[in-house]
Length: 93
Image (cartoon, rainbow, N blue to C red; front, side, top):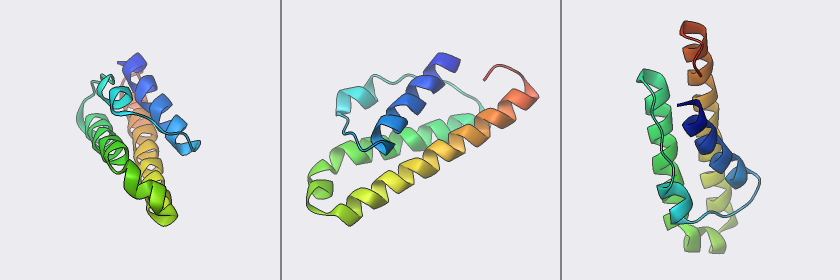
């Protein structure tokens, strides 16, 4: 599970660093979690898919690109918080 979470975080970090990703990058992600962590990972996955699918829109609209990347930052923040809580409850994250 830790490796899966790290992979999701890695893809999010690439996007937040200004890089582009493809649909394969997102589809190759595997992840498991429970409760809050699973919800945060699911939300990030959906946002990453939207980010990939809206590439043409983002290319033509800097504000839309910024907004999508900001929403992915929120997803990353939620994953970190959920992982911290899970680690306090059970040191596996």
